[in-house]
Image (cartoon, rainbow, N blue to C red):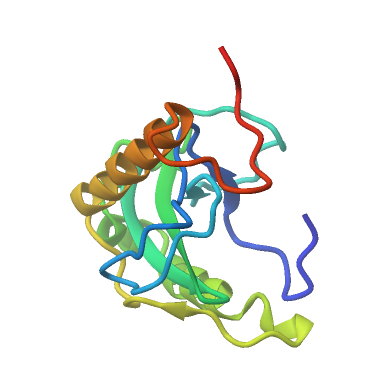
Length: 163
């Protein structure tokens, strides 16, 4: 994907079998989900080829409000990264790669502004802990399970797998 704001300093991916529920108002952001799988922001040292599936460790998250919708960003580091064994939190990341968090936050807030859109908002500019991020993942995994099992009505325009 091309961004007019510039090349991201991270790898952008998703966590499978997750879904930001478009009917659920997040109590933290006060906005409904964006209807996508949850985003993974991999902060490793080099690009990962598009379509790659890699093992990662969760180190934190940010709650973005993007055009009025909740869009959680899970911050991860891949297993093959040289800092994998020593980066267990966003604080560790900032020690290992100073300035990475500030650049990440700036990019997330401003990447649409170069297209004439308003600045995105973050619930807070300090990322959550890994434990808090894992709770977000559990929540959106449950939203996905409910969607697939039809406990949540299928939104218009969604085409879900059948048995």
